[in-house]
Image (tube, rainbow over all chains, first blue to last red; front, side):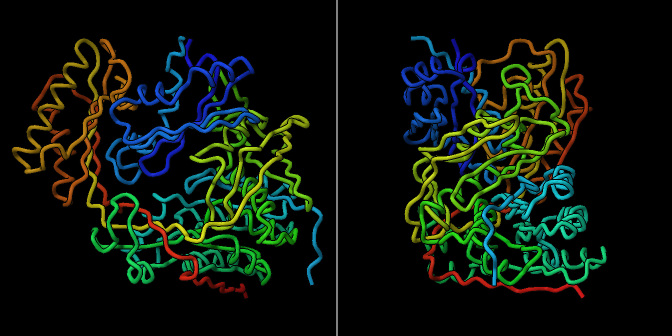
Amino acid sequence: MRVDDVADVRAGDKGDTLILAVLPRDAAGWDLLQERLTVARVAEHFGAAVRGQVLRHELPLLPGLVFRVPGVLAGGVTGAATLDGHGKTLSYHLLTLELGG
Amino acid sequence: MTTRRTSVRLGAGAGFAGDRLDPAVELAVRGGLQYLVFECLGERTVAEGHARRRRDPALGYDPLLKRRMGAVLAPCRASGTRVVTNAGAANPGAAGAAVAGVARDLGLRGTRVAVVSGDDVLDAVRAVDPVVWETGEPVSAGRPLISANVYLGADPVVQALQEDADVVVTGRLADPSLYVGPIRHELGWDPEDDHMMGVATMTGHLLECAGQLTGGYFADPVTKPVTGLASLGFPYADVSAAGEVRLSKLSGTGGRLDARTCAEQLLYEVDDPGGYLTPDVTADFTGVTFTETGPDQVLAGGATGRTRPAQLKVTLGQDGGWLGEGQISYAGPRALQRAELAAEVVLERLVAVHGLPPGAAEVELIGTGAAFRGLASPAVDPPEVRLRVAARVDSEVAAHAVGWEVEALYTNGPAGGGGARTGVRPLVAVRSCLIPRDLVNTGVDIIEVA
């Protein structure tokens, strides 16, 4: 099972930090995300590009999670030569993360 | 002198500088709005504005500003809808004059255009020499500054509205503050009331990206289908004096507005939902909930806030050198191998023949998962690959070499490269720092169309 099976993800950027909001589609999805979509798993999924600590904020009322993934955008929209400097496409990279227990 | 409203309706006219015109016209004509707000200024957009102003001192504001205003001013003036926009970008004064010119050409006599100044803090930044976030060094230790623009809050917008402005044009002003200003002005909310400023800021934050709230950036044909995406309607909010926020969009427009689209937009670009810093308040979105009250109607509640930050964020523009790029396609058998060989050739020649520093050029093999920056599993035998080579370099000549070498692959191989495109453009690098709030002095000037 992948994140794509239980949740939606929206990407945003601040400098070279990628911000990912993860919104479960139902209560079961929320339980699964809380337990398995850990900081360690997200950091591993974004690999060597991460510089510094990945942070996770929980919003139980919404419900949803916010991940702050620093360094991934290396230079950001005004600093990198990369086509997608914003990292807008990277929401779909998180959707490919396997949530197996 | 003012009669306070019991509620105010604000519509989103644009969510970025290049946004569509027709959804705003639709709102202007039949939205029943008191305010139509155009958010047209990203950090990148400010940088580009400064680059244009360097070439021509009369420019530097949003290139689409005159077309936007030409499309909405007449219906807005007819319905008494006031316009607020940060499309002044790097040159609010010239932008205000341009808007007044549009109003004059449309015969809209008596239109009052307010120009908000004070976001240009180049002198203050040079004097204080604060630490740059990205480098950890003082501003003076970096490349020469082109510009420094502080994020203003809602105060000067309120002042402009008190002076009966029909159109308020600003430069760098925090995106939600474009909405907080009118809400404060109409409902009489106290800027020191952190809770209400949190509610107003949530409203502005939800609306500021326009179509992102109504299913645009949200849409996925399988997991999140949205009907009528080509005629996506932009959202509006009814905010009551008591702090009730009702979000909606016009009937007959495409898109969708529900708890899911709202939840995604609430968290967009928010790295700390419990402490979203703006010049007006430190907003707290952790208690926000969305309740669907009808088709495309959502009630938003639970936002609050606490003391606003003592320092204000500044966007610094520095000379960023040049970007040169070139792209070319390979298709069919061995497309990936030929694209990889082509990349090797270009990289070798950029260093050996053109003297670019090794490592200056970046290679993307589009079609193999390049957007994921090497994180995705590699593509196996893709039917086509588009090679892109790009470099940030110090000189225009070096930037030109990148596209030139890609184009030269046509005849010099490998085989079957087609559809080469090249580009060269100057860059302004964007950095951030903080300055104390008391160093910022804002002003409001009114231009009245005769």
